[in-house]
Image (cartoon, rainbow, N blue to C red; front, side):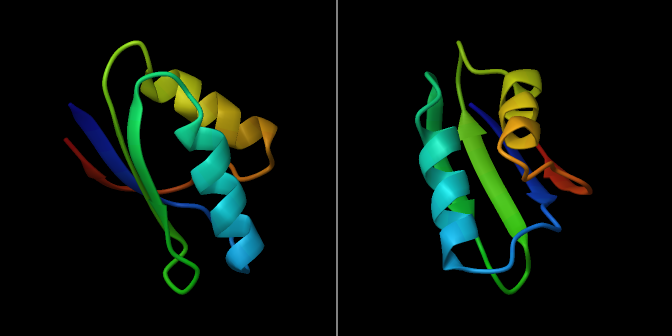
Length: 73
Protein backbone atom coordinates (compact mmCIF):
# COMPACT_ATOMS: atom_id res chain seq x y z
CA UNK A 1 0.00 0.00 0.00
CA UNK A 2 1.15 3.54 -0.80
CA UNK A 3 0.57 6.54 1.45
CA UNK A 4 1.21 10.29 1.25
CA UNK A 5 0.51 13.14 3.65
CA UNK A 6 0.49 16.61 2.12
CA UNK A 7 -0.76 20.17 2.56
CA UNK A 8 -3.75 21.54 0.64
CA UNK A 9 -3.76 25.32 1.23
CA UNK A 10 -7.31 25.73 -0.16
CA UNK A 11 -8.89 23.84 2.78
CA UNK A 12 -10.92 26.35 4.80
CA UNK A 13 -14.00 24.49 6.10
CA UNK A 14 -15.76 21.19 6.62
CA UNK A 15 -17.18 21.32 3.10
CA UNK A 16 -13.62 21.38 1.73
CA UNK A 17 -12.56 18.31 3.71
CA UNK A 18 -15.78 16.47 2.82
CA UNK A 19 -15.32 17.20 -0.89
CA UNK A 20 -11.71 15.98 -0.85
CA UNK A 21 -12.57 12.82 1.10
CA UNK A 22 -15.54 11.97 -1.15
CA UNK A 23 -13.92 12.77 -4.52
CA UNK A 24 -10.56 11.10 -3.83
CA UNK A 25 -12.27 8.23 -1.98
CA UNK A 26 -14.24 7.43 -5.14
CA UNK A 27 -11.07 6.67 -7.11
CA UNK A 28 -10.58 2.97 -7.72
CA UNK A 29 -7.80 1.65 -5.48
CA UNK A 30 -8.00 4.42 -2.85
CA UNK A 31 -8.29 2.78 0.58
CA UNK A 32 -8.60 5.84 2.84
CA UNK A 33 -8.62 9.63 2.74
CA UNK A 34 -8.41 11.87 5.81
CA UNK A 35 -8.50 15.65 5.45
CA UNK A 36 -8.10 18.03 8.42
CA UNK A 37 -9.34 21.63 8.52
CA UNK A 38 -6.94 23.05 11.12
CA UNK A 39 -3.69 21.66 9.73
CA UNK A 40 -4.83 21.65 6.07
CA UNK A 41 -3.23 18.19 5.88
CA UNK A 42 -4.57 15.33 3.79
CA UNK A 43 -3.45 11.72 4.09
CA UNK A 44 -4.29 9.27 1.30
CA UNK A 45 -3.62 5.52 1.26
CA UNK A 46 -4.02 3.57 -1.97
CA UNK A 47 -3.21 0.45 -3.98
CA UNK A 48 -3.29 -0.16 -7.70
CA UNK A 49 -4.97 0.85 -9.93
CA UNK A 50 -4.78 4.26 -8.19
CA UNK A 51 -1.58 6.27 -8.67
CA UNK A 52 -0.21 9.41 -7.03
CA UNK A 53 -0.32 11.18 -10.40
CA UNK A 54 -4.02 10.33 -10.76
CA UNK A 55 -4.79 11.47 -7.20
CA UNK A 56 -2.86 14.73 -7.65
CA UNK A 57 -4.58 15.38 -11.00
CA UNK A 58 -8.02 14.90 -9.43
CA UNK A 59 -7.15 17.24 -6.56
CA UNK A 60 -6.04 19.86 -9.09
CA UNK A 61 -9.25 19.36 -11.10
CA UNK A 62 -11.50 19.93 -8.05
CA UNK A 63 -9.47 23.04 -7.05
CA UNK A 64 -7.68 21.51 -4.04
CA UNK A 65 -4.17 21.08 -5.46
CA UNK A 66 -1.62 19.41 -3.18
CA UNK A 67 1.28 21.66 -2.24
CA UNK A 68 3.87 20.40 0.22
CA UNK A 69 4.47 16.69 0.70
CA UNK A 70 5.00 15.94 4.37
CA UNK A 71 5.39 12.19 4.41
CA UNK A 72 5.84 9.66 1.64
CA UNK A 73 5.80 5.93 2.09
